[in-house]
Length: 70
Image (tube, rainbow, N blue to C red; front, side):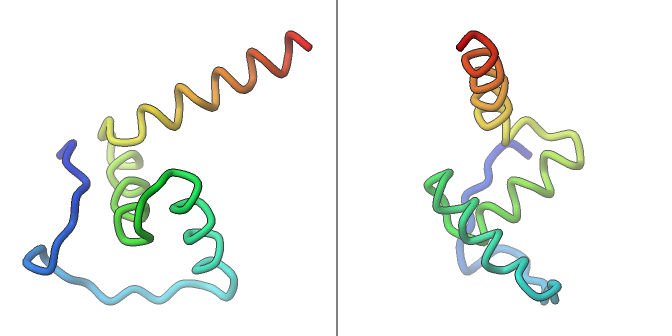
């Protein structure tokens, strides 16, 4: 489950999100260089124990380490 690439032949679901969440997903997706769909899949995979968001976790840890050193 480490491949987060999506295409039109993948399974599809409809998802309703609270006001403002779509924009937050888009912002996070842009920051990670992914589509909103790929970002949602990465978030779900990480929540289910996948390693697809490993780079983001490493970046967060580095930011904390660098921020703490200043």
